[in-house]
Amino acid sequence: MKAIILAGGFGTRTHGLTHETPAGLCEIEEKTLLDQLMLKLEPIHAIGDVLIVTNGLHYLDFFRWRMQAPYQKRIHIETNQAYVPEKRNGVIKDLFLGLLSHQVPQDDCLLLFSNRYFDFPIGHFLLPCLGHREAGFVGISASENGWIHMDNDGRIRCFEARLQNRGTYSPSGVFFFPKSFMLRIYEYLEMVRLEPDDFKHFIFWLAEKEPLYGIEFTERCQSLSVRTPSKQSEETLEEKKR
Image (cartoon, rainbow, N blue to C red; front, side, top):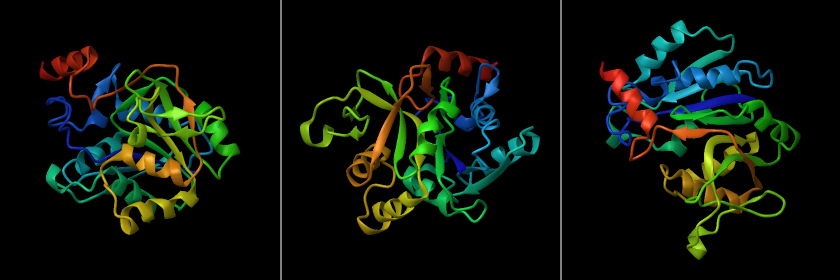
């Protein structure tokens, strides 16, 4: 299995917190978000290579980070060649770019986002994934503003598009896609040509095509991509300004 970390954003939704530093290299609890992810990935033997997909603007930032990274896992960096937000590929295209990358083998994929922080052990998330490799899995957290429902078997049902009701869960930024799902992603992008930067819509679409199950995160989970900065984000910004 490979891990793909999406880091192609330009910080347009973080109120200047990541204007110069990419979100994955911002620090929480004295470590960058990327280091927080790598510390969770490092002890998992089922994961071989780690691929970071970023944009052309921040490629050198991640390259310098990798030069100093102390991890044993092989870390690769792929660029989508975008240098301004208006030219970005979109999150689904960046995922597909990572899946097709010649730098890592074609295999099942653990998908992570560089702007996410969570306390949930990735190894616990992967246990059901490794036992059911014909299905996809989504890390979810209870949320009043959620848009994901699950049935009694834990299968994700996304009803908002039809019923306009609110769900009970939101994604936590951790996903498992088996190798067989690559054709579905190609179908989404190249055949039905749906929105390449709307991950929510992609999950809606995929849940109707393939078995997709939720694994609940009860521990802390947060994202830097918010329109109203959290207190912790504000504290981080103040530290960066000093």
